[in-house]
Figure 1 (cartoon, rainbow, N blue to C red):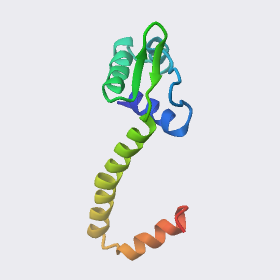
Figure 2: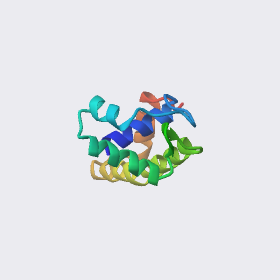
Figure 3: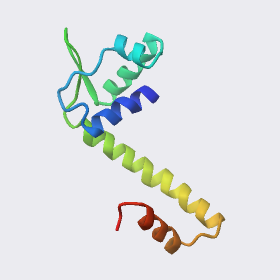
Figure 4: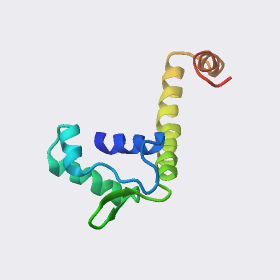
Length: 111
């Protein structure tokens, strides 16, 4: 999962663009100090999800629309899980929504 998330983050941040070759599974296993089978499994899952595709004889490339798919999925997880957990904990601690919004505006870029 961590390898998949790192590759996805590289796609979201623009380190990898549509059509770019990603590093090989051998390189992934060395960079992240994991078993080569683990690297193959991570790349396989990204391929199954339509994030990567195999360019025969060349390597794995970033698929068309990969950035949008990743962003959409992560956004849904964030909004459905993280925000719900935040609101639940805020309620438990008697923190009002107004106070939370104020803190978010203070600390974030949302002004």
